[in-house]
Length: 123
Image 1: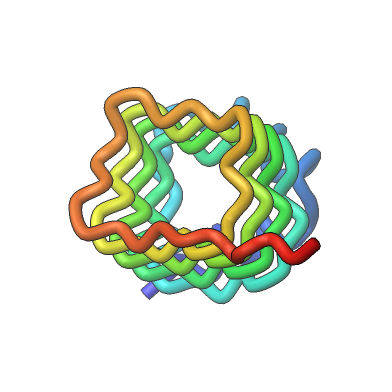
Image 2: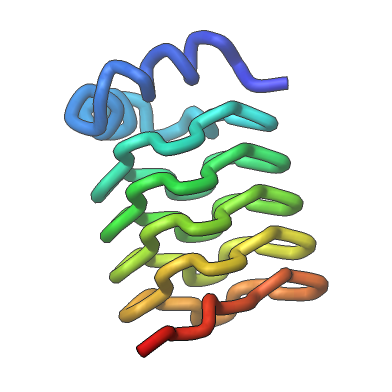
């Protein structure tokens, strides 16, 4: 389960979270199974964060940095990941159905068993 202090810090907002990450570079935050559905995490520093099984469905993750983050079995369905940095992230068994990945960096990401689907466009 997630570290309650880490979840509380993140819920204070991205500015407070990013400042805490700068002040505590050696702490690897634990957000395992955290419920962050619909959260505004635009440009959040989520480098090397453990988000295994987290609910990030419909979250605003534009420009967020997930370098080497553990997103195994996380739900990122319908999330806005435009411009997100997912390089070397573990997205195995994650759900990315209908997520917006435009401009996202997935270089070296683990995508084994990841669900990826798009909503058909209607004209």
